[in-house]
Length: 269
Ligand SMILES: [Fe+2]
Image (cartoon, rainbow, N blue to C red; front, side):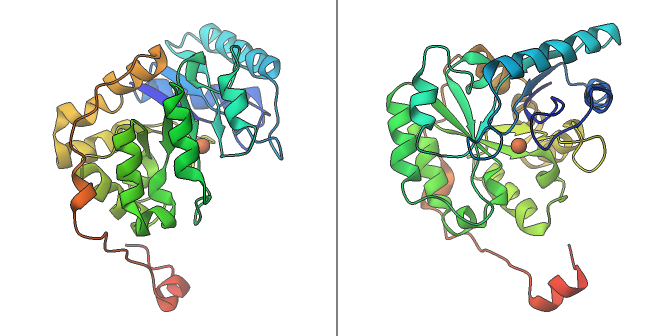
């Protein structure tokens, strides 16, 4: 399996803070059957503003430790970015360090409850320029729950949607879990990734989520979301997406939100 979204490099963002913890994350990933991990530390000029050279140095050091530990695991460079004014110029640079494995795909994240007003034309302009946005965990953004048609439009333009394994399993609550199911059965979810940050609460594992998705759409489709599709992403190869995205004309998504009492009691289904 290939994991295209993880915070596994020590000290660059809110992922592991030591090489020992990062290596332990690699052991967990390897034991789960993951053979390739794209390290995607948060990049944001206002908070996590690491440089290309610091990313490469960290990646090289962890890869060396992984080999020394005898693990069959390859680490590749990447980043996870929000939309910000300079992003377009940074992605267009010949030596950009913000795409996945220096290719045409880039991982973009949104805040939990809001999407910038210009998000759609901004992403459309990048797609027109030959880049492919991979939208990180849309299932955790409540704005998308109220506007799933925007995800459908972006997918029709060529964007990919990445669901997080923990969301599929219900670790982020019933809203995210139910929205995952809606996107998966609607044919608009393309990749499953771990979005790992540590060895416990948010660990680098995919297999359990793949089994759950296999129950919904079949084993071949579920496995494709952690094998063939991410293989094309890391190779920088364009994918032929299905012509129809079924959620586009479907009924409005029935957003379910917890009542104040459920929140008080922590009633997670
Ligand atoms: Fe992430």
